[in-house]
Amino acid sequence: MKKKEELFELIKSLDPSEKRYFKRFNTIHSDKKENVTTQLFDLIEKMDDFEEDKIKLFFSDRKTAQHIHVSKNYLYKNILKSLRSFHQGFSKEAEVRDLLFEIELLYHKKLYRQAAKQLSKAFALANKFELQLLKAEIFHWIFRINFMDPETEFEDIDLEQKKEILDSYFLETKLEFLNFRLISFLERKNINNPKDYFLDVPEDQLNSTIIKSDYLFHCTLKALINKDLDSAFHLCDEAIKISENEPEINIEKPGRYFLMISTFVDICIHFNELDKGCQTLYQAESFYNALTNQKAKGISVAFYALYYYKLIFILNKQNKFEDAIASYEEFEKRFPNYNEDFPKHQVVMIYSQLALVYFGNNNAKKSLEVIGNIYNVDSKFIAPSIEDFIDLLSIFCYFELNNPEMLKYKIEVIKLKHKENTQNTILFDFLKIMDKWNKSNTIEGTITNIPTELQNFNFYNWIESHKSN
Image (cartoon, rainbow, N blue to C red; front, side, top):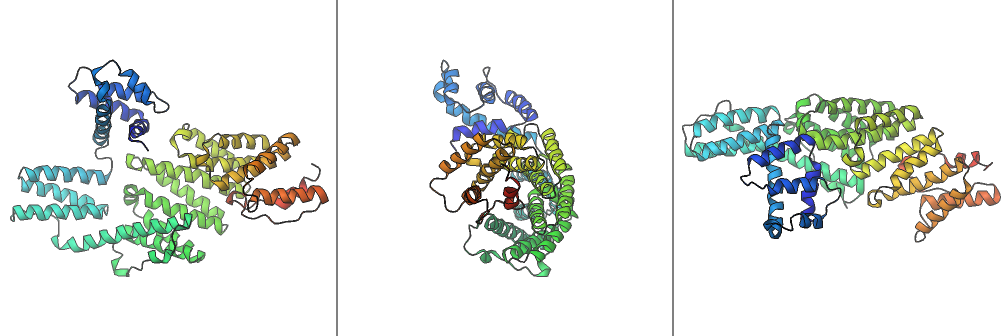
């Protein structure tokens, strides 16, 4: 991404209250009568797409025209400063970091005993919420202050804890990295030997809630890679239970909980434990609804995209089409600007499930409307399996609507689109079977590479049921 577009993206990411705060902040911290950065901010805010020429034209008759890149850099930094000020103390981790900044100021003022008092407060917070990295940083300041003033006392801090804290921090960080790599392998098969990332941790090192739940989740991922789904089911369930016992820690690190829930629901779907999958999603939603801190905002968007996609998917598999449609309507009402706020590939996933729900509910026309919404999304956000799925579903819809002209047109478009690859796609498998059925009234052939969205769909029964067409 070009650096000039980063400023555009940053401004577009601000919510209304953040924008208002920035304008006040920028006015206070600027001594110029003509506030160029505020004008630049207002100009970019009104853009739908970044337009460099528009900016140059707006400032063309001013002295700043030759140095507009300087104003952009200043604006970018000032927005970040205002966000830091606006969200000060928005999480326990941020509170500890604010205290550490104050400690550094007091240290440089040689007010070591005042700094020690702040360190005790910071340590108490970091200890309560298992913020191991910050605890390690606190010890760094303890030893710097102790070196400058050996008589300084640190209340409620056991200096012998340093090794244990550092060991816990390194183990927590290692587990986080290894889990990320194993999830990456399960999703994309992009690691040659995933067992290189397996770790065995002795019982006596599982000394915190985060490490216990992260290690159980690590064992879940190992079990999935080893195709031991039964063990994965129980291990992931246990990891979630341990994690939910400390909700305050989850609020500080919501991404951990999100990954556990996502994995567990996938396992439930595999075992056809659909009620258990729904129950897990509802429980997780209650947790995320309780998140009020801004730190969780980004991960919450990811969670709610997954929540509604998986929920609609499960309800569809249970043939609860009306419930699935009601869930989507709730999603629309809850996130009226979801097309802008949610990542495009996640919007496509939700649409794909919704299209299948309407088709299952005997509303092929509505299904085609939703498929149209998917086609309107930039193609780079549509996975090949989803593209095959919506092409195939559109064929079904035109059959249901008894529209031979559009059906013929759609088939020709598909053939043209896949003219370089006609051997190994679900579409051509399906079209070959349809062609044989049209000629001999018999169903022959095999359909391979069926997308997840259609794995519970019986193609052969569907073809048989449309002999009249």
